Image (cartoon, rainbow, N blue to C red; front, side):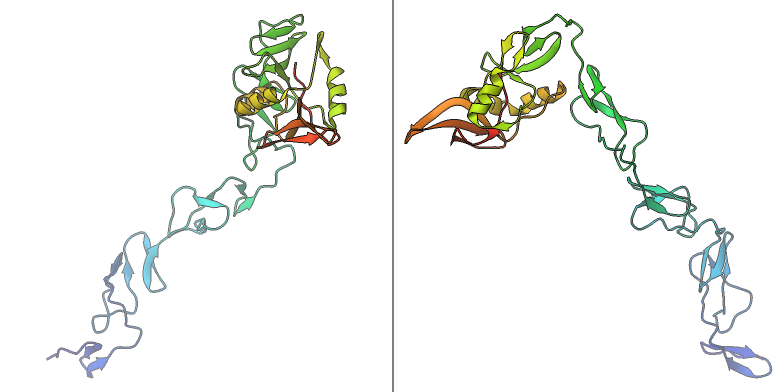
Length: 289
């Protein structure tokens, strides 16, 4: 004869209903668990696990070999590489600027030669491998060439060493582009500033500049205004031919007023603003042709 025992007890032929030990605490009904053949009071001291799983820390977990040891989380990680087991991977993927060294994502140390982003007008992308998003050199779009550490427009195939003077929107001297047409004028802005100086110094410096017989001059205030109006397109053209962008305060050759026997000439800031100034003050100078 046997008796039904209350929860937490089990039947013993010699002792009747006896209390189960504290180790019998698992019902073995959870994920990937099966009930062992022996228990106590409907509970077990451990559970059997389905194929591919093992009993660990009170639950059935995947059986993974020791190579599955990386969670692939934290600074520098983008995720796991390949399949995972037990929530871990054998290797990890790293974000830009980091590299997998066999056991962790570590920050790349790039040499100083990796300095070009290779983006913008005329750029097709980086040349070779990147380090922290930068390259040692760039590949250029059709019609551009890598020169002086940037992509600049190739000289027109129709040009020759003897080509000089205005040709559409460009001014040539011995086959090289030396000026870009200023919209709504007959003038061409030269490729670079010649420095910061007083008005008298600026006028003298411009008179000394000549391209194939064409003498440069200080731009009028109207010419500066047109450069500012079309600043974006002009700057793109200037840099594509190896020049520098227009920025900062520049002199004009236009007199604004005479006050107390002092001349004031118009100045313009390509970063925003316009004014007039005494001639002994110093501003940037961009000659025109």
